[in-house]
Image (tube, rainbow, N blue to C red; front, side):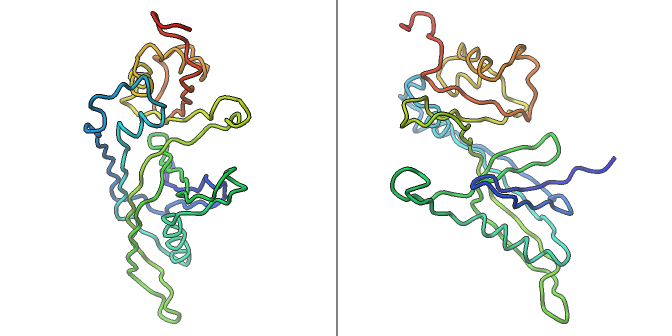
Length: 227
């Protein structure tokens, strides 16, 4: 069986740019920090989904010592470095004033690791150069990434439709009730998540699957709440 290779590809703005690592990273570290100070005294049920996610903290992914070899080394290192630079969206693209946004990336390694991320830091160490030209032909790369939740294509909020839904890639610790609690402040909202994702059996939802979180306006009223 051929070993799965880690890859990183650009998804926002949409692009065909992909780097498949010839050799897998030496180490991938995933960490998460809960922002307790901002949570204290707040009612999660009154907050938008993206604000709840922000207050719950984000996952930081550190990839250490990815070896790059061969004639593509410099080109791939330059691509990684460019992904750490913000891009400017014009007023026409965002429907308002110009804004600066990070590049959206997708990190995939087999079926067990799948995250949508922004690149914060890239450290490139060139180790070997071609004798005749001085072109780098060997490097070690380390990266710091932050998980984000991409928007699902949907109605334009300015047209009167519902705002875009947000996406979440499940890991082994995720369950629909806990996801609903984090997103909406009540575990019973798991039924709404199941409904918009066409899930018949919540116990059979596997890690690595991307789920879309309905907007608060799409949720069925909880018991005791007015419709």
